[in-house]
Length: 176
Image (cartoon, rainbow, N blue to C red; front, side):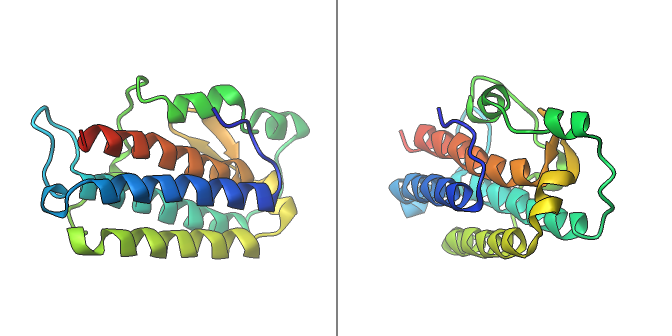
């Protein structure tokens, strides 16, 4: 389990490490099987990748939106909105079943041959927004995560990496 990280460089390293793993797991699935949903239901490898890209794009948009918001949270609210090992575990542990919000569900719009491109584009947008967002905004603006509660924008960016890890494990299961 990865412990929480706190600065830009550590977050970027975590994002890179988990994305490499996600892409490696996707690559292990034969190309002709990437669009196949598992027999027991669930998402195909392409749908997993589309979902991950949609989540990441949403977080990039939150960063942009947060930059225009007033810093009104109290110190107690900010403290409660930090990333913690428990929050990380909720996202990473696939034994914890969750239903993705509708806005992040795969639409089927991503073709198998362009799935990795979608990931590269969403990562580029996230990193650009992350580095353009002032530190006081990253640590002072919060949005509520549907499963772990309020998170600062910095925590949201870190959580993207843990989300990648969750879905890398899902891709590993699909590749069996």
